Length: 513
Image 1 (cartoon, helix red, strand yellow):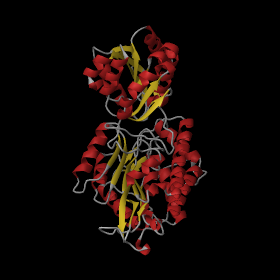
Image 2 (cartoon, rainbow, N blue to C red):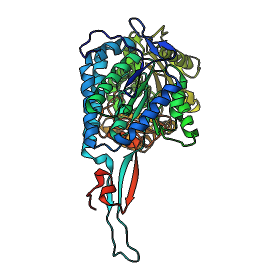
Image 3 (cartoon, rainbow, N blue to C red):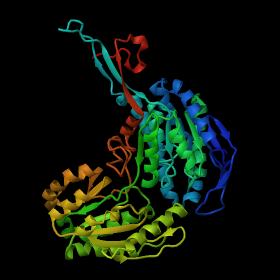
Image 4 (cartoon, rainbow, N blue to C red):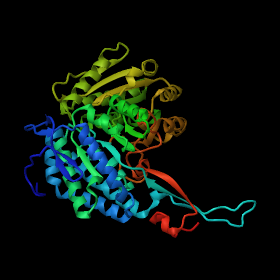
């Protein structure tokens, strides 16, 4: 395929250590529009081949200079931009996402690559520490001790269904691992294999341009659990990056823990992202906030990890205005195409979970068909929610739950009852400051990101961003999959005691205390 191609027909093979490899059974993708394409289905043999190549590449790639790795990331971004038109075309066909959304996601993806390139050029991720020798210290001298972060080894990355670019083949996990000095084996998502293949071609082109060991990156197509299970259990894989469902992620997490050598599983699994509408804000602009919430709830058919699925608002007429405005706005939203048939079915099943509960009142009920989804809105009170934690399970799609509270104290108790979240939002005016202060210790314990007077949908890619949180939002509360701190997942500290400069990593040579 040339960079200016107007059409794209995938060859449906895996990219393993610089070679397009076939063999085995095939599966068809299920595009939102157009005809299906055939793709090879990966096998354990493909996984072993890719992992062994990644290990072979590690020895040269891990010791390469930060500048060479930064340049590699920049070239990947360049190669993706050279394929911009066809990435958008195929991505839209496979996922049903609008062109503008995919163009924005491509920009985010290339931006992530360039952000990590800039980050490693600065060297802050190395966390260098030097304690010089103190030969005259009494009662015992101190040796020269130096510490630096070093790459851990080959990393497995699972493509996400809802982000064909930013959380998939060359997404944040891949960018962070490559920046750290770790080769990557990607299990592509079966929802968008064609898009993944184009991005893999971009990475392949960058590998050749930069003269890097081809084992540094492999992509394996798969539409079965076997490839994923084999990948996380392969002894050469040293960490896993995953974005997906709670059930699938937990199963892989358990496999990682059960290995003879347990490895870290960095999974982003699910979140309902509660939004707390405080009293003064409700009084002054409740209807405005309600309409804004509806817009965030239905953005991208609600298929964002940060979708604010729960709104907490006071009982009474002022809270009623919030609810009425949200309902009115949701009534104006028509059917939206979902990413896959499976996600659409899961959304319908999630809606039925609410419909079947007597303590939950349907404010807006729509039946969705096929691969489309329509908004649904339900309401209950805090007491009911705290007695039925199934109401706090994520429904991936445009479904909202309003929780009504009778006081600020009840809002605090409700906040304490939430499980770990990616985000928590405060809608507040100046008169709400004291109430917000009371909530803050709870929310910062529950969520990886706390925001005020906005909506969490959309994650800014920058140094300070955290996309993670306490379980079940993620499997590691100290990690993030967005922002430059994400690189820490694929590094480990090593101390060097009394080593001559010639034996030290290049980034530690000549460093002084």
